[in-house]
Amino acid sequence: MRAAVRPHVDFLGGFMAEPLVAPLRRPNRSGFMAPFLVLEMVAAIGSAMGADSLEEVLKEAQLYRLPDADEPVREDKVARLHQAMRRKWPDEAVAMSTRAGAEAGQRIMETQITTKAQGMLAKMPRATGAWLLAKTARQNAWTFSGSGEFVVESENRFILRENPILVGETSEVMVCDFHASLFERLFSTLIHPRLVCRETQCHARGDEACVFEFTMSEA
Image (cartoon, rainbow, N blue to C red; front, top):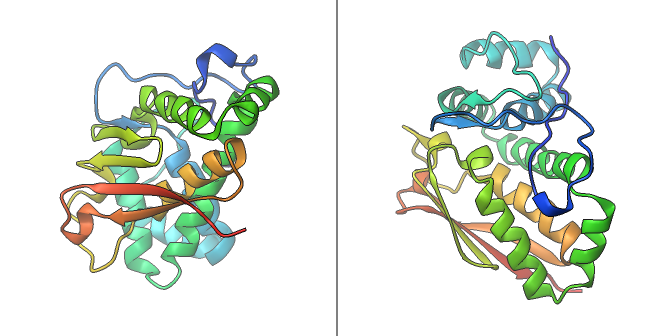
């Protein structure tokens, strides 16, 4: 099985370092997402559940080949993996999704956002830095939202409409822990360590859209 190599994503374009890995190919049509939505989830499942269980869930999700680090992935494949994981391990799903999302955010920072850019964000007023990072995320939203509509309502509130990972899925609880964790890792590391991201509405639960909100944790 191919190792979960790390994709290069075009964040903070004006401050980019030379790519540490092959640049992520942008799809020429809608309906594709970045490979880290598969690769980091595969790594999290393998670490938590073991190789045999990982092989089983990949078969259930009909993923017979892992994507290359620069290869956009059809969003239906991403959905099948994430949904199969939640069905198979409902008690462990939050932990695995949270780990995978955090690792995806970490790889974005390690491979794409230069030390200089990180320093500049840290010196900006919190609201200004958060808005710049949110705007940049919006410009690259296909990587984590595919054909869905990602809206930055403010630096503290994001909306993801028609989340393709949730197609056909219903739940009594909110399930977008991967996205919340990805956003939290980026913003808590680059903007303020006390920033916490939580999903407050979820399409799978019957809400109109998936909504993510940032708050400051207690010191």
